[in-house]
Image (cartoon, rainbow, N blue to C red; front, side, top):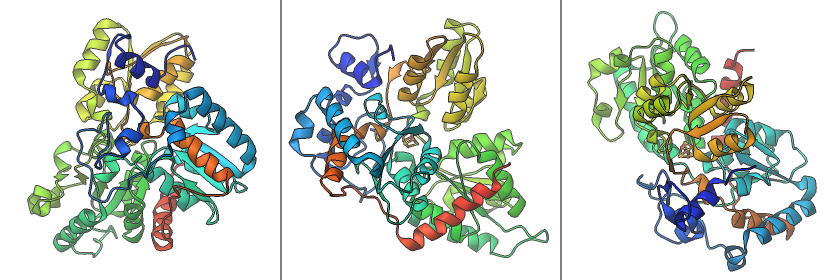
Length: 426
Ligand code: SF4
């Protein structure tokens, strides 16, 4: 790579020796500084979001990992990995910092990574350098004796946290009180619950128990089609933007997609509006993708005539409408890799992924729509210090930071995930 990584750029900005700005120069500090403070998402895109009570917290990281320099940490990670051999597989999400991704056996989105882990039945441990819901999905899909490890337990996801089981159950009760449970003359259930992959295992299980299904940002349209075949309307959570953008592209009028505000009776809607609904959208969002604006797109078009603008469907609807294309992280990666001639890309997704694409494709001009360096707060909590720690504990025979999903939850979450796989077109 010939460009500074996001972590390096933030370090330069913090020392006043690089142009540009970071949304939080405190990102330059080790994440353990924030793990010791009252629960919060920490600096980065989600720092203003309210973290739920009871969110997992990371215990103290031994001092030797906090004080070691990057070179020493990389050397220790490599040595531990070599000792463990096939006993461990390391997964790195597209949004992870390069300092971590360089040690990953696989790089991908959450579902690609969970499936990659399945190919390694010989691995005793799967170290998931991503966030909590991803590690849960890997635990659901991996063999019972395999341990899934999240290097920093504070690496949650603010969007996934916006839909908790109690609130969704309360919503479901209210919808059931209005619509009942009986199918219509065409055999369609009153409401089909659809959860985005970015949700807790408990909500995936809720969908499995209630005739619902999981979707990813790659297959949301296919999954919604599946749900419309089986239901009169859909309850989509936690990401309102993915739900709205996908359903709108399928021809569902925006006025038939009311927003469910968790704490209000009927989610703040009238019964008539819910009866007219095709998709009831949960009021969740990703604070990384909420940063992208139509003004940024307009500026990119002025500054770079002919620019190809691609955004993630977690961006707000006006941003998706103003872009040339929208698609999942894998779609964005393939679009860049597939461009036959040198192209200028303005991309609306997490900065680590955009920087990596720019470094890996010097034949193109690639930049992030948001000029401010602002990574996902929780992905950023995974630091090489934590990775070195969990690997060296494995070498010593100790599993730390294991993520487990109880059998009942896993069983029903698997039902919803399997429906998703079956809904996938050949
Ligand atoms: S980028 Fe957004 S959806 Fe993805 S882990 Fe971070 S907060 Fe969650």
